[in-house]
Image 1 (cartoon, helix red, strand yellow):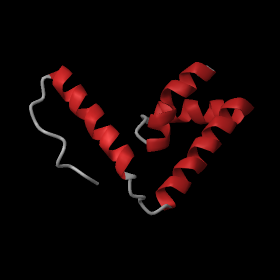
Image 2 (cartoon, rainbow, N blue to C red):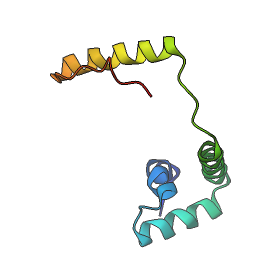
Image 3 (tube, one colour):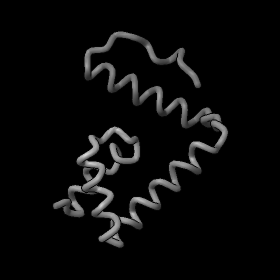
Length: 89
């Protein structure tokens, strides 16, 4: 029996359609019986559909700069030696 916690843990893979058939079937059974999980599933699915239908938006320069600095700090802590400053979407 799938619990709400199980469903939430598997939701990403379910939406990506990467769950095995038995798990997929159990998750589908759960969302037909649990209105709360159905709302979560339906909202996530619709959000993904809206996102996929949008054109990519450029990242504002100040946000891009903060992101690159954060990535460079993280790279230093991980021991990565490449410079991120040249990358820009």
